[in-house]
Amino acid sequence: MKSFFTMAEEVQRKMQMELDKYKQIQKEYQRAVSIRQQLDGQLSENTFVKDELDMLKPGAEVFKLIGPVLLKQSLEEAKQTVLKRMEFIKGELKRQEDLLQDLDKKQDAHRETLNKLQQQFQHMQVKAAMKA
Amino acid sequence: MASQDGPQLQQVDLTKLSLPQLTQLRQQLDQELSVFQESLQTLKIAQQKFQDSGDSLEKITPKAEGNPILVPLTGSMYVPGRIADANSVIVDVGTGYFVQKDIDGAKDYFRRKVNYVTEQMEKIQVLGLEKSKIRDAVMDVVEIKFQAQLQLQEAAAAAAAEKS
Image (tube, rainbow over all chains, first blue to last red; front, side, top):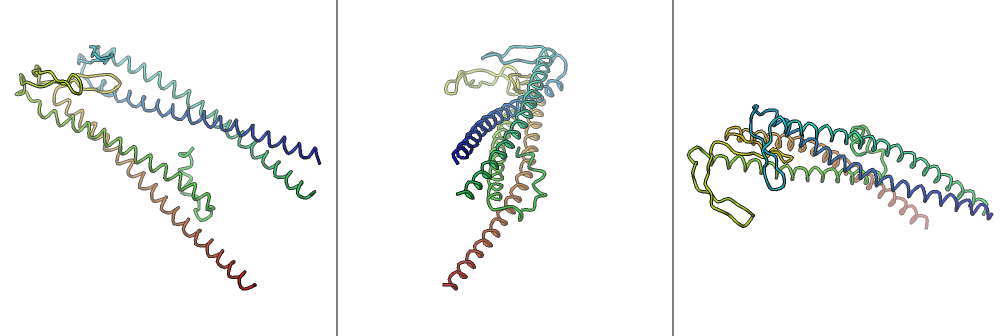
């Protein structure tokens, strides 16, 4: 009877541990989602700027805001900078996407173990009730 | 995760869900609806800004060259100035880039922006309408289920009373 009791405790402890891990991953997941949203916004803003720059005639006046001053920049240079930035953001987006997929899998795995542990625990409770 | 649930949602028979599940679904839909509402608000502000910028261009005509203006240095301090070039303006196109455009080009720019934002708003409105329809359906099912449960309880109480 005593070993039975400690076994139940063991399962409960494992469940708590799994739950903590699961919550941790959920937090990470949410963080990744908000980072991805931010990147999405930045990408679309840069796309707008690129479209706008592409529409300009060569030799048009382009300025870049650096601190409080507007600095003149050549159209070509501005286009290059925006393209490079978009490239970078796309890379970051891909990274976050992969991270999210990874976290999704982890989340599923933890959920499954949690379910198993819970079933085990319930099983034990039923057994204990029958013995008593 | 919510977006993954979306397409399947319509295939689920609402009457087969339990009350707690339905409540959860309703909460989720409420949340999504409030996100839509917020987005609409933000877009409305953006739309107004572009509209205002476009409208103020109407006042800059070649005739206005040399007109005195007050230039805001900060929100509360102005210095007198004079319009030196009434043929072009510098437009903020985002991410710190500014482009010099002639008046017609700038007007066109703002018109395009207003159109784009309006389009997005319409899209969100359609989505919001669909969501609120689903929400209403969920609410109806909740009501039906609740009534059924209530009747069941009353019947059980009546049966118990008869026995004693």
